[in-house]
Image (cartoon, rainbow, N blue to C red; front, side):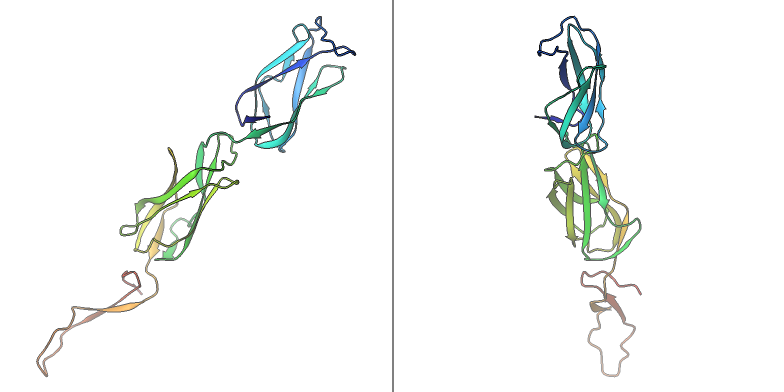
Length: 231
């Protein structure tokens, strides 16, 4: 069986005699602890309950970490301990999203260069959530560039956007990753001109009379995306 991370579940422990009969006269305290599963997992709720007519009923229990092979270990003073059947904990609903891979703040990236970004989705207990649809888009700035891409989170909760090359106009801005109502904003970074690709005359020379002075002409370097290259 399985339960969702952080969600409440219950358990019942029965105090029995050597023949397996419930000791209805017993009102002792029964304590449970979490065993197996993921290292560092925590069992929440009231963990010591007084038996009523030989039955200790636990409610509102929860486990925070995703994992398999969990059991509940019950003790009652000198009585022989008991262990529950094994169970699993699965991730809850997506509650948080953030960038784990992104350009550094104020980084300068050449126009059209491939950029890799990774958005990480977790539930309320910090467990990775797989199968979430995450969209990457421009949040602010980067005028003239366009970006819209969607990836699905893997088993590690990661939506990986590899080789994004559509940011090809000089500017400063941020990106955003969204998963439904959840949103994360990237660091602010800069797109700068790429390597020179072609030259442009300003103004474009026209026809002139033989011997007439050509006049001043400016030649400007541009990259492959028509961004002016400033030396």
